[in-house]
Image (cartoon, rainbow, N blue to C red; front, side, top):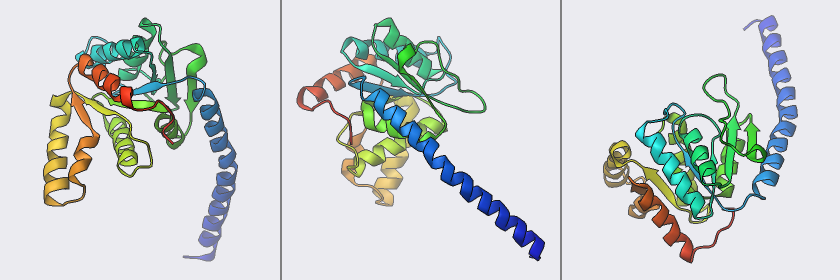
Length: 232
């Protein structure tokens, strides 16, 4: 590598380091805003799922039904703030006059705040990792509807926090046995039985349901003996 190229790379790296230092303040501001806003809202359940699921689809309608029923039980509903399943969750909460929270993320495509979030409960984030901390800290339960890579990322983050006891025991529910069964067959056969990369008890960290009634009853029973509080 010649000297001019070395100097160019060094200059670029120095500029990147300077930018990273200033980034810290933006990250801190997102944490402070999120903590202050969500601490005031009270017990909430987060509902995750695909941004691409359209109104009328069975999973969109099921997410709305679950959100309505949880709101009737006194829980607020948190979504990722965007379209699809996120919109369905906020829409169901508003229909039941429940608290409807949206943690929106700025993306170059696909993500925009849906119209069913309460005006005083809509937060915007630039950083995925800050946003995920908000979900993890302030949700008294997690519901994973069918979704793509983002939903899988959120699911595995949450189940890892519960498995490693970095989060208090918190209900984690997957909706749609037909959607999730292939993944969990692989988890059981390969992760658990063949490679021994998880323990048998880890399979009990997750519940898989098909109906809104099952979900609400599970949360109702869980919180007859467990406290409602932030997770860490």
